[in-house]
Image 1: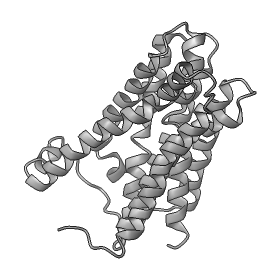
Image 2: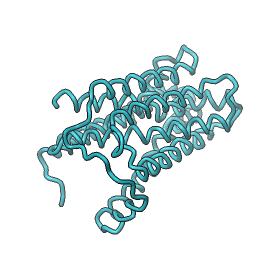
Image 3: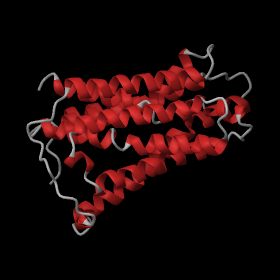
Amino acid sequence: MPRILPVIVLAQFLCTSLWFAGNAIAADLAATLQQPPTFVAHLTSAVQLGFISGTLVFALLAIADRFSPSRVFFFSALAAALCNLGINLPSVEAGSLLAFRFLTGFFLAGIYPVGMKIAADYAQTGLGKWLGFLVGALVLGTAFPHLLKSVTAQLPWQYVALATSGLAVLGGLAMLLLVPDGPYRRTGQRLQLTAFLSGFRLPRFRAAAFGYFGHMWELYTFWAFLPLMLTTYNSVHRGANLPVSLLSFLLIGAGGMACMGSGLLSRIIAPTP
């Protein structure tokens, strides 16, 4: 198990680099498709709506309970990587691009939540630490396309989509080949279309869920518009010349370090009951 959990974290990082691959090259996409700079809002909404839809479908059908979670992760990574490459199609239009981003988000539902389930299948105790690392991997994965954009600034923007798709395939393969089903996995769960409603009858779960919804709203708004804010600053303050992509990576990625640190603190400070 000392080897398994770091592999899960690494696979999570590699695959979630798909999440904001479109945002990192939003300015290039907007210019190519003759869209306004605010097109980034539509890109972000498409992938987020896809993720919400995918999460609902995966949960209602109990996909990760009825099938091997590692295989679900692998096939989701392949599907998301292929959809992500749709960005690079020479004939892509604004509508089809948004559809590709929606599908990328849909299959990310088989990566991020399923990766957490796989970790839970291996760690009966001390899960808080690894959940902190997994969320941190998500944050770094989200930020990583901005770093790719920064280091490949002299190359065509299509390389960002190629690189993130390649990383996702590697992450999926790592999960498939190196992470068998965990010892604490419960198999063969029966399909219950209304099971998720029972959770909302619990006041503590309901409070946590709605708090999480609000947190995600502000978080993804900040992540999506940070590059646009930095670009606007450069245009207003002539001579500022801030490195937008690099700063976007550093500012978003800093949250990943905080998540991992919080995971480690959970081993020292007991969570509030």
